[in-house]
Image (tube, rainbow, N blue to C red; front, side, top):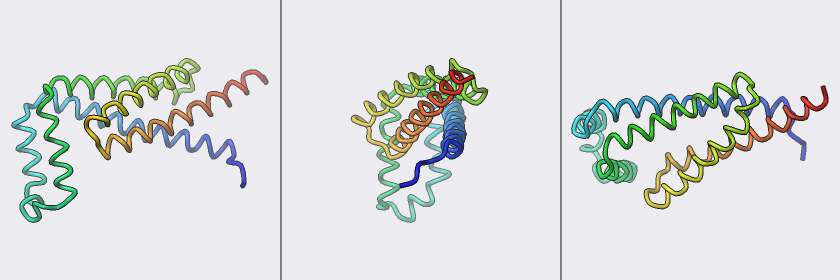
Length: 161
């Protein structure tokens, strides 16, 4: 089995950061949506977007899964969701910017913060299983491993110089 080159790891690191940044922007947008709009408005918009599909095939497995997932949202106050999405998104953007700029503090801070997010997300999945959350958690774990690898490589370079 051939070892992966440092160039390949760095490319994976770059794309991992890029993917996390896109998700973080999405989290910030969802946080703003939850902060600005009440549940009734959000349900009306969701029905306008997805309602036609739901009426065409109301017993579709995917739509039933999505509908069950949204039922748990209204049990939690809307501003709690706004805080969760906004805080995660802003913290991640801050850390990802540090990684992008190759700041030495950003590597251990990102490893710690993303690891806490992973633990929290695993805890959440115990009570409210979610394919999306599982995907994000797996991506977080991959990014943590890539950040560790990149940080080790960066430290080796610093010691050599």
